[in-house]
Image (cartoon, rainbow, N blue to C red; front, side, top):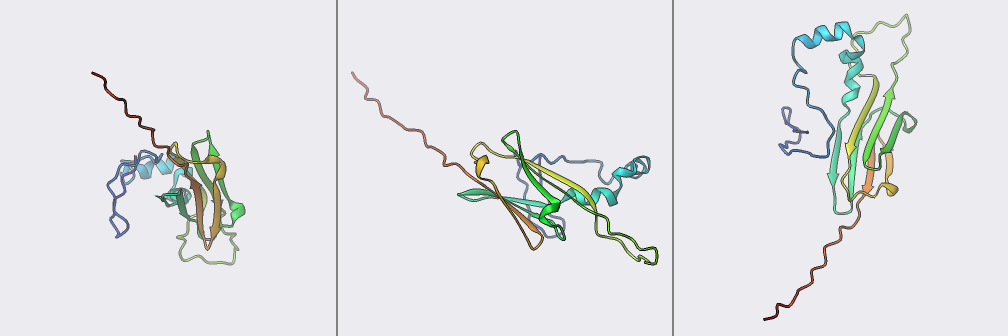
Length: 160
């Protein structure tokens, strides 16, 4: 389920998205979540931040178009796959910047680590014609749509 709130002026939508595989985490800001990361350092904010890569999904008359912000990543660091013929998977990894022992860091805000986003595609998606392009840090994945055949309606004469 994906309910997309707008706390900071972004797009606002209270639309239920049946195709999204995003999982709502009601304990995201819960105080105990900090003690959880102490026990499991791999769940820390620094390692988890890049996991929540933002993706826009729009549907045009011709295709489903996904746009993901991936600043600083090269196409070799990103993978786009189709699983089970109906699940689009976008994944990759941003490496940690190498540290020089003479460097003094004042602030580290950019995230690093692996990310993975999955989207269940509708029946009208043409899986064999998916295209992906990365330009200026934005990955665009285009999934063409099949033309939906309208059912043929045949009028039956009523005798009597």
